[in-house]
Length: 152
Image 1 (cartoon, one colour):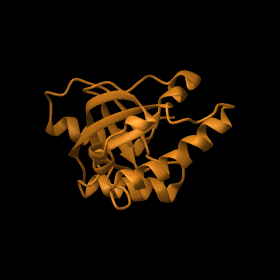
Image 2 (image 1 turned 30 degrees about the vertical axis):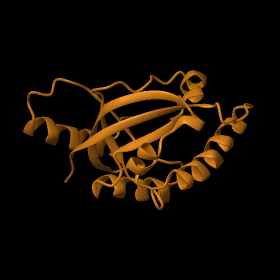
Image 3 (image 1 turned 180 degrees about the vertical axis):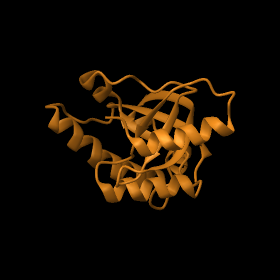
Image 4 (image 1 turned 120 degrees about the vertical axis):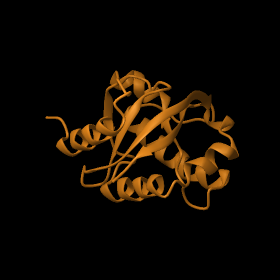
């Protein structure tokens, strides 16, 4: 079943923006309800304008890769729609090549590259271990930039 909250927000958005002739995905950041809430709040505060994901998992799960121009309804930890974003850039780089600029744009912690690396290395290591794969500094990371378009 599709998320009713996301559909409601999307309809409100396209009513205000009839020029948008696209579809959307609905999803939340992170793996826990608290993490989803915290990261969605950073988006609403316009501190979070980027995200990173484990590139290998797209192939392992047959999930489509994000594309520039994609619309997403961001859900909180209770799976309620809180915002609509649009992807503005997508890049794939080795973990060791993620920039300080990208880490800052993710808006998490103290916004430094050291913080980003520490948190994401742990997260990606756990994700890959669950898929019987190993994390290295060369593990590919999908970097996505986005802009906040709409929220209640």
